[in-house]
Image 1 (cartoon, rainbow, N blue to C red):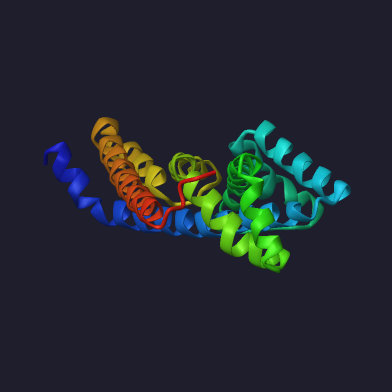
Image 2: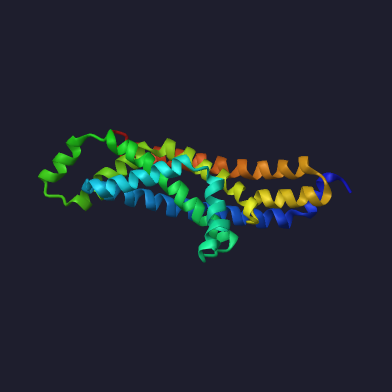
Length: 221
């Protein structure tokens, strides 16, 4: 049996790994982005104490390697009486870590957003929430799309680290095949192809969203 035939015979393992990776990635991306948006909205109130807490959280996430965070949640928390399954711990690590980065991306765009649009909205009687929902968020999100695209791909790649805490995703599937049949090149080439395919789809999605934002005139800062 050729090496590629062996890989094909293990296709179910790769398929299950792909589904697990997509599930982790999609949930982490959606929830992480939601966290970033909420934190960005909270900072609109300019409460010094809360703002410092948020900035400290972001600074901590920027300083801590993702794998260390995953280790902490899966292996460290049980010492405090908090135990989670590997999948749950991995997902939580992705959400917390990338939620901080999504917030930082949105905050960077918010800082250069023209105050004139906000002043005009205030003069029209818009509430703080409506100003954020209808004016600030659509514009900063649209201008942040290229950075968002990069962060999404980083989030996708970070799912590979979760094989270290026994999450059965793409990398774990490839590692299982190579350790069983001793064909690392073929196994990891398949894994690379799967990650690459997902990344291409993400790039196309970001491109379409950017085109939509341009048509709606949401390109100004």
